[in-house]
Amino acid sequence: MKWEVLAKLQGKNIIDTLLKNRGIKTLKEKKEFFNPTRPEKLSLKELEINQTEIKKAIKRIKEAKRKKEKVIVYGDYDADGICATAILWECLYKLGLHVLPYIPERFSEGYGLNIESIKKLKEKDPDLSLILTVDHGIVADKKVDVAKELGIDVIITDHHERGKTTPKAYAVVHTTKISGSGVAWILSRELGSSSGLELAALGTISDQLPLIGPNRSIAKYGLERLRETKRIGLLSMFEEAAIEKEKIGTYEVGFIIAPRINAMGRLTHAIDSLRLLCTKDRKRAGELADLIGRTNLERQKIVETVVAHAKEKLGEEIKESIIILSHESYHEGVIGLAAAKLVEKFYKPAIVLSKKKDISKASARSIAGFNIIEAIRKLEGLYLEGGGHPMAAGFSIETSKIEEFAKKINEIAKPFLTQEILSRKLKIDLEIDFNQINQELVEQINQFEPTGLGNFAPSFITKKVEVLETRTVGRENTHLKLKLKKDSKVIDAIAFGLAKTHPMLPSTFVDIVYSIEENIWNNHTSLQLKIKDLKVV
Image (cartoon, rainbow, N blue to C red; front, side):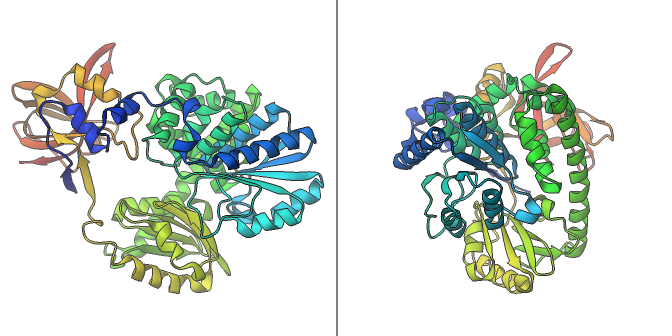
């Protein structure tokens, strides 16, 4: 892996250099970074949400309440969509509307509004006259038209990229600045509700949005609420997953909580994840948390099977710019996860398709510097429908056109996927020496939390460090525990997963890339380096 040092230390101020690496330069930007505007005070203007559209949406919601109309909050089956559904449904329910949540079933209804589903909802309840979409709808032109023909107004709340035209909905509450659950929370806020911020943080982090600007505000203050949550469904999930509530951060959300919320929609029906978030029944919460935990384990096994098959099919040498794999055995619910694993392994954009007789489903994941949804949209005539972000997208396609699509998207991608973009890089903030590491620096670094995409955890490089002691730790001895020395200063370090690739002997000298953390053991706190990579010199 190539190491890329982003900056040289300017003067003695390490923190200013770290901020500069994250595009934060002015005094105002620094102040906002360390003390983000509270979500309650984020303006519609800075969120790039059209105020007129919000006013129209609120007016229509109030009319629905006054006329006792039947309302549906039409969600999505991923974590962001489920959290968005919970936020808006709870808000409207508390306002006294006749409102029900609706989560489509991935395999029979697909992503977003479904024409047949809208018709069935109307048949089931002829008084249905308002649908609010959450986390989708911005490219649902025809579906919105069908709803209107059935006498149903549609209010769209979404954060995905716009298509060539905007649906003729009653109101469109849209921005790409925040998550789908973030947009739902802002509409709820404008309706007078302040609850659900912890769910907006869950949705924001799980959707892997850059944690800067308004997303940082929602994630930071939402995580604070999450650590104090009284939601019995979340508490049951934390118990099942063995999470300490008070220590929840972006890692716990991204790798433990979000995969569980997502698991139901991937394998069965996401409605159970929504029930878990909203239930007031302690016994029911425990049952749902157990069900979701078991489903998540099953999901992990299926992903492993798909990825193993895909790797076998691909071999080690891939000539194409974009990895494109399709097979009848690939489970539609996990193809996105499989694509992400292939990106991780080969560091190339990947599209994995669940192949069916007539219509196949595809999920795409990209690498930094290549906009996958833009590339897909250049082939509009070749696929049926789809949407997404620069880093992740999904679409459906006629099975007979997969080969042609694969050939053409690789032709489009080739000039953009240069050797430079296809080189996996470990981004390092700057080079420092051990004598610059102290408790004050760690406390300042801690203020960078929550870290994630767009605001990665501060990382450093120190060269020619002497290894004083080394031993393997962990259940299978896969980790290295080290005692390191530089500038007559000795610091402990841990290198997860590096024991097999870096069998080390004392008195070796190494260059190390690391982050700095506090290690608490037997009520004693000490500084520890968490090594990301190292090279013997």
